[in-house]
Image (cartoon, helix red, strand yellow):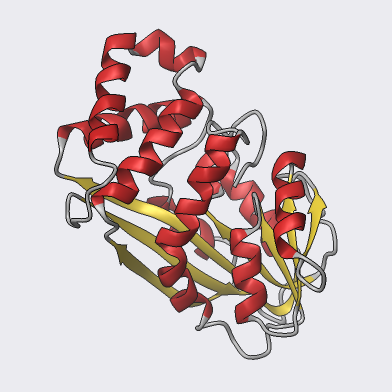
Length: 266
């Protein structure tokens, strides 16, 4: 996810791309389980908003069969990577600011967003714009962090920095806590609302967090609130865990929702 440029803290550098590949691998099973709940009718046109380098877009194309799946993102760097990896006959990718309606290729049968709203300021308005992109009986599918539990201080410190940086840019790391109220305010029918539990290996988490820290440690907000020694200690702690295969030091509660646009809505 890289929407929009002004709010997205993690950038579209090589480390950011590497991190998103790891995110895709960690969260693919829970996302696949969610997509298996899509109504059978919702397979015609699918928009993946804030698609980044296209990991979720390709997963949508796999799950949705012969649907026309289109990834939307503002990063030309990520879009070039997505087009390269999709290959001939794969999903298509379009440059777009997904925070500003109308979305390209609207209307859609499915609008999907994973870890996008957490980076945005005007979340309720953006969500409504996506919802209004849907055809009658189309569905909005969302995944966002509800909570992240960490037992190690270095992980908690990293999350504290990340949450603060996102808030400074108008986002909210734990936006899953807001998602239910925002989704129900749309006036559609909630088809699914649950928390998926994800517990990656310590090594995967340490690698993912280390890549993020590299991407944003020179951000002005970070430099104004944390000294170099603190950042170095966190980076060193994460680096020391990159090969660990145990689980349980950290886990995610991911809010997953599917909301249908009723046929009677304008």
